[in-house]
Length: 229
Image 1 (cartoon, rainbow, N blue to C red):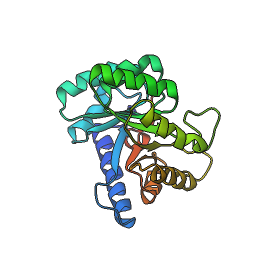
Image 2 (image 1 turned 90 degrees about the vertical axis):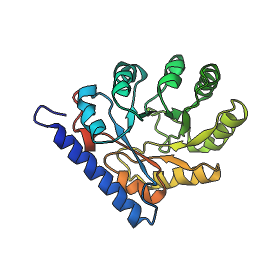
Image 3 (image 1 turned 60 degrees about the horizontal axis):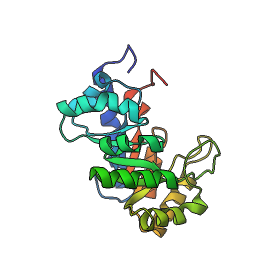
């Protein structure tokens, strides 16, 4: 939130995003509630997030393990039923913390991460849901497996590391139409028998619904402009 905004502004935007998702579900002929809103709360404080929790929302996304560790344990003491998603890159040396804190991890993208997660999940007895990140635009600066390697990586996660993969995630290039990237992710998911599709953000979450998105990651359309990097 900016200084000029109030908690009511955030709650109103949350309601508007949820309404848009429900409308998009109806238009696409999908059941109501088939798309889950992940409210992206990265860079925002617990105080700034609290109005959405007070309004009843419980599914949130964070980019960094360390930042999430600093605010979510306290919020979870105050609010029951929080589901926390890691939507940013994961380093293998943070696998233990990620498994302990997050319920869903969207960014499995290389063997080292798969191996580290498998080890920590066995040690902790926790089983967060896992998504493989696919770099649909094959952008060199962006994380994710290339589409041509997605099938083999999903197979390796299952066979070599014993991981149950829930679905796929992508972040389309900002300067390209997102629809072809959503369609590609849906095709890859179907080919691998995966039902989860994490795709669509503030600018294009409505467009992701007809392509089968099950999770949309929306931050600025709810919380406003981020005050910090």
